[in-house]
Image: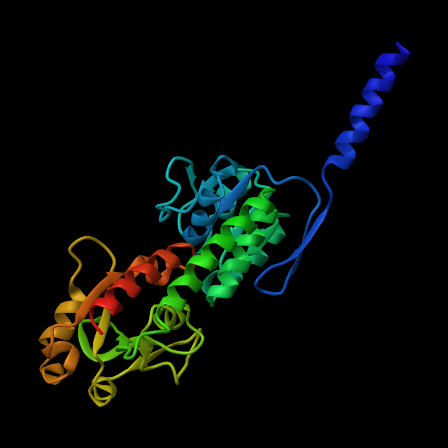
Length: 294
């Protein structure tokens, strides 16, 4: 009997010390303490699901939004905003992972119900690598995340290094347009797409400017004045040529080099808009495109 009691005591002692409390700071600057192992996760921002899948922890996810294409075989919680807090509570998560910006107001709603929230909102490539590592800590896969982050970073740096010998680099602009070219959105300093263009070997003509998270509106006059060699436009689903057709058919743009030389290129708008590991895949695609059109 004494041996059984001693064995039980040792087991309980081991369990008590098996998990050490972890304190992390999220992208809103909030201090979040994890005092037990995270086993149940609700992902309220699809971009974060990419991290979880790549780190092999999909089995910990118990809920995702209706818009998540990375994880599709778990409970759906509805929209990203407003969050269905009642549904989330029913899933009994250890933590809810969400993004910043329009989802920031959801944090306090979750906290009112005693639900731990952690915000992942990278705006640069370095922040993306850091947040990948943070998610790894939360998942209990710190080493896996560090190794994967290092591998992605090395791939990025190797691509950039290969462009150092280019004698000429193409002047590039990214344009997102809907309905007309009277107002388009582009990226400058502070946007991860601006970094991608530079690492891929291009010169972003809007790099000297910035806006909210590096994004801002431009008119056709700006594009005409800059006269880029290459124009990048987004496509969000197969056959989506909306922005491409607008740019190519705009009367104002008929004399722009990129239009005249048919160097308006469609890129994956989902990769370009989601701050996760897909950015490094897009980097490789841009590097190939710039190399062939410089």
